[in-house]
Amino acid sequence: MPKYNIFCLYSEIIIFIACIFLFNYIFAKKMSQSKNKKNPLSELSTQKYKLFLLNDNHNTFDYIINNIIEQCNYNSEQAEQCALLAHIHGKYELLTGDQEYLQGIQHNLSDKNIKTELQ
Image (cartoon, rainbow, N blue to C red; front, side, top):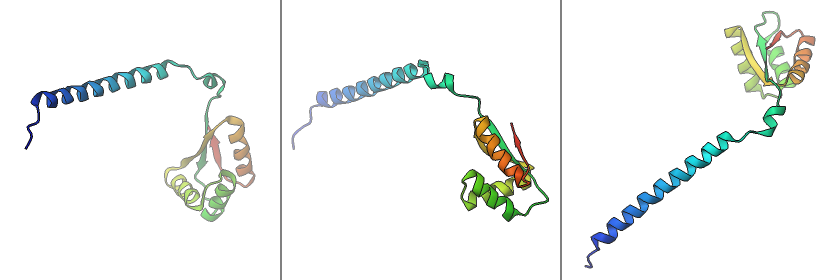
């Protein structure tokens, strides 16, 4: 059985460790450079608003769920969870986005007597 040279083993371990340190150095440098870069679109982006569904004791759950599905493009499970959480907690965040977009959805929901709040 051939003997493995102990010097070769140590050399391979040292090379492996050096590669790990080099990789970490390069990765950390790239991460710090990417944090320092400014996103040109960030200056153009507008403030994000939140549309909340408020607890409603007048409409049925099915009515609210169907309108959330229609207006927010949620599936039935998502809409049911939103309605239930709004009922339990008093309000629930339906969507986030630009003010114009959310005002349109708020207007459509208020036309159907569903209470919402835009913040």
